[in-house]
Image (tube, rainbow, N blue to C red; front, top):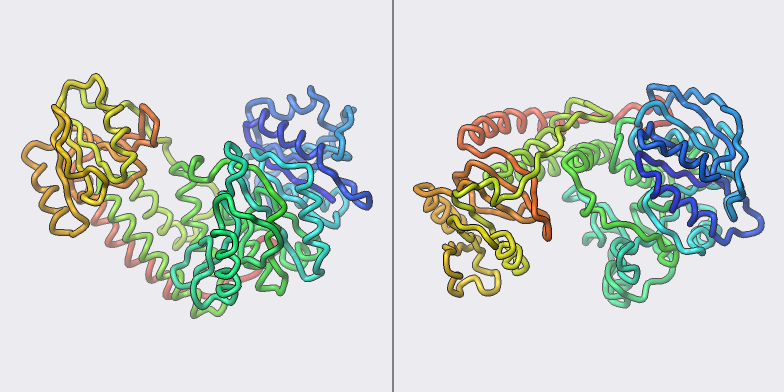
Length: 501
């Protein structure tokens, strides 16, 4: 059996994972070997692993494409013993292939070294209880038709709280969700299970094995026979949806995908790691995954539905002063339609404190949830300029008197109410518009700068405002919408040329 860990510039994290792997209680009939794929790290990850005695051998890979590796065995390094991990081999990639290419490299390296019975795919920033592997193997051994077994994910900072368990594909909307939609073949059994546990997330009494559509590669056990049958990960993806795509392909080939609720992995919630680049990959790759759904007519319908939803969301973000994020969603649709694969170059967002950015000018803050009151008050502390709070009328305390020095604008969800309040700000607009969790929804508020804040942070992602910028985006959005929907209507069955997708 081989565990594969892909890492990039996280030496401390991957050493922690190796420690967790070395403490696994492995059944006597199995030997656990580990392959660490170093995705061209620049922080000295491979050297650190050698220095700390984790490395038994090194494969150098100078390939420019993950699916065409050129493994060269370097001299072995004397390890110091790794507990349950029988050996640790480092694959040193000359190129960063992302999570998708990294796992493909690891699976090809495992095949190169002697195909194992099982592959255990593990993220480099997780922690694992000692029985994690044993629980995965117990589920795998229960049925020879099982191709993939996934783990229940708990918050690494609140380990009694489940943050991800069952995952299903909603084929009407083209999204993945915690509960199967009505009409899904597993809907009835899931509803009964959720009534007993309190739902798929939280602190419920979770135990047993459940069939699902998707399991996460943060801790996923694969049967090698199924891998040989289905192939490896889609080489186009780079990041995100690669594991979900693999799960759906497994099911299409007749293999079962199951979740063992007793196999726990501790991980950081995905939304805490979300960046503009990750948002782009998640949406672009989701469209490619939907395009593979059988039959073709369903693929065309659900892909088109997802494009419409993404583009509508993109336009809402643009109207709400979040054109940078709107551009990312638009580009994801365009690149999916034109087949632009692999990594893309996206500028890292600039960051600033909103009150410093405002100087002595006006700051407008969206209060979309109750917790935003405290965030607004914290930002305003020590600020001497004009302060406007734009508050949804459903937020508790929305209609109470505003503090001294604060103007409060309350609006409802109705379009007329939102437009009237937005137009009221055109005479004396805020210089800086602050939003938490990208939830501001007054359309076309004039502003010089928009700042997207994460709760508890003193700085946020900034972008320039301006009506002219919005008009230019809208023109491009209209043309892109026609092209992307035409692509969905013309979908053809994707050719299967090799093992990768």
